[in-house]
Amino acid sequence: MRITVQDILKAKKRISSYIIETRLEYSDVLSTEIGAEIYLKLENLQVSGSFKPRGGLNKILKTKETNPNAEFVAPTAGGHGVGLSYSAKILNSKVHILMPENADSDRLKDIKNNGASIHTFKTVPEARIRAKELEKEKGYVFVSAYNDVEMIEGAGTIGIELLNQVPDIDCLVCGVGGGGYLAGIGIVLKAINPNIKIYGVQQENSPFMANWFKSKKYPENFIMKPSIAEGIGAEVEKDTITWDYINEFVEDFLVVSEDEIKDTVKWTMKNHKHYVEPSGIVGLSGIRKYPEIFKKQKKTVTIVTGRNMSYDKFLNLIRT
Image (cartoon, rainbow, N blue to C red; front, side, top):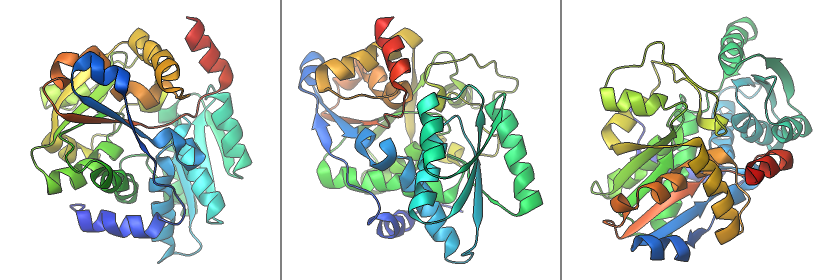
């Protein structure tokens, strides 16, 4: 199934009363440094603290059109769980969140406060296996953070907002995990202007999708190292529907280090007064590391995807 702009417009209509249109913020400091216009799309100010409810709300609302008593199950490092559990709370639905034992404490707290049932595992892959089992055993609706039509449609609503806010955008930069929100926004932007350039950015500790993109071969037995940007640091399923969109839309993948991500968390607080999680500013890290690419563009936008990080983790980051 090919997701269309029309599908994303329907998703926007479906979820519009539950979300806010996040603002676009011009980065005077970075624009001056690079010599081109750089904008931040502030999804860290979205309900629940990230862009995730766009997909979560769309998934639940669309599913309930034909299955009003559906219960949902999702494996997550934390961020997807916050967004989906928030969506379930707002829509009076049941959701079961499966996550690692070492997940961020504030994300765990938020998920509990949203009323979801929580089950912990040693790793996200273990959580995913169990979630798939529960899908078969209990009839729960499995919700991937990215390998899911409705999640991509919901994330794509960011693209509709972007075109209203900056119609002459010529470059988009996204941090990438499984590629769901890049795929959704890309569907919209490329349909309107195929010449818009899209860059993906990943952390060097776990550049799974970047490796796949550059080699055009699925990375078997790829070694993944822990990262402070754990929200986009997971191995991607071989059958993910996001791959075809990424392979089609993305100009190139850029890679940033752990220290560069930390520095961008600090930079964003200092220059824009925004509290953001490491996973949320990987795209911005890419712009800062590779200014020679973006000075060739007129108007570049990156998505600041979330702020769901514990205060203790934030303090540790800014102290190192």
